[in-house]
Each structure stands twice: as structure tokens, then as C-alpha cells.
Image (tube, rainbow, N blue to C red; front, side, top):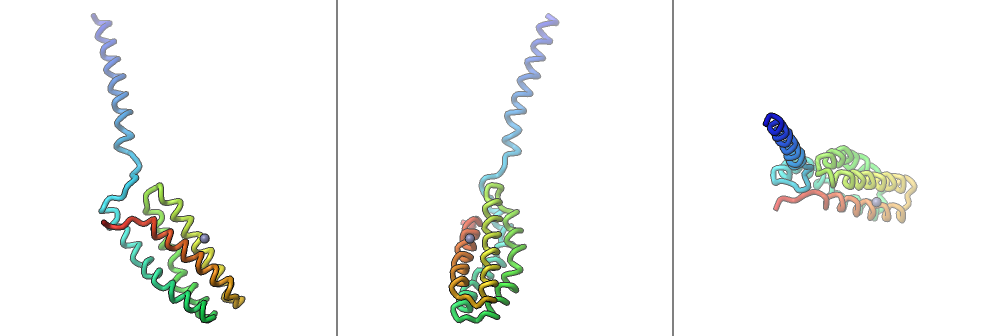
Length: 149
Ligand code: ZN
């Protein structure tokens, strides 16, 4: 009898351990969707980035008009501040999106640096190609940001 009881309690311990180990991944699961709260929080980062996105057409016009000094100063000044903001936003995305967002931000800045170099070399062709690439990466970055529905 005593033996049976100890076997039963051992079974009980095993069952409990099994249930706990099964249910714990559920509670610590990595989020794969954005809550509306999270989307609202992200707006703090998104708004200044979208403001800069609107200035991309300004940059396009400067390049088209071969205004190289202004092209260089725009790509350094307002766009220079963007780097930390884009990386800050990347870190606040879902784990599945973080890497891609950080990569797109990095790419965007690489193109911006090449625009700056092309402005110094007064090379319209390179500046225009790099501008298009920068725009594409910028928009791909913004596409990763969840929108409030
Ligand atoms: Zn690129």
C-alpha cells in the first residue's frame, strides 16, 4: 500500500512537470503580431521618419537640378538624424521584423553616402541611381511598420 502511494505520487509529480513544461512556452511565447497598443507606441518613432520621407522629393529635385552643395547638406543634415531614429524603430519591431528593418536602414544610409559622394563628384548619373535605390529601401522599411486599422 505504501509502495503504491509513492508510485502514485511519483506519477503525479511527473504529470505536473509535464503540464508545466507544456504550458510555459505558451506564456513566454515570442509575439508574432502587433497589438493596437504596440502600434500606437510605435507612432512616436514613425512620425519623424515619415516627415523626412516627405523630403525625399526635395532631394530628388536638388539632384535633378544639379544643386550639389544643397544635395550634400540635405543628405547630411535632416537625413543624418534619421539613422538613429530608423535603428531605434527597428529595435521596437517584432523579433521577426527587426533584422530586416535594420538591414534596410543600413542600406538606405549606404545609398545616402553614395549620393553625398556623387554630389561631391558632380555625377548626376550616379546620384540619380543611388537616389532611386535609397527611395526603394526607405519605402521597404516603412512597409514593415504596422499600421493602425
Ligand atoms: Zn539598397
